[in-house]
Image 1 (cartoon, rainbow, N blue to C red):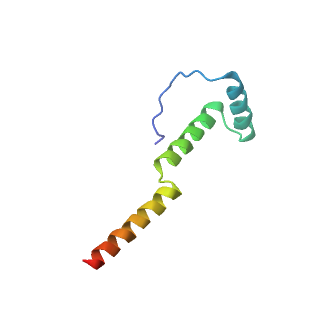
Image 2: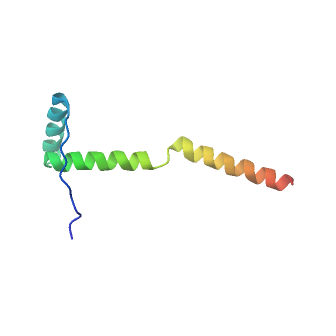
Image 3: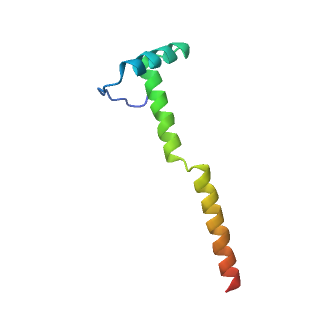
Amino acid sequence: MKPLKSKVSITLDSPLIDTLKRLAEEDDRSLSQYINLALTEHVHRRKSPSYAEIIEEQLRLKNDKQIAEKQ
């Protein structure tokens, strides 16, 4: 079964639309498909922890472990 889709209306800058159309054509996709893909990838990147966040969490866990071992 295809995922459910909803129609939306947005306003974009004309140069951006031109670029998106060109990129969609290069990718052999419709403009709608290309924008959907670009937004999906953007959201996934935003939801994924950054490299810095991963390192900070590892350092925090290491520090917590060292403190626990001293007690």
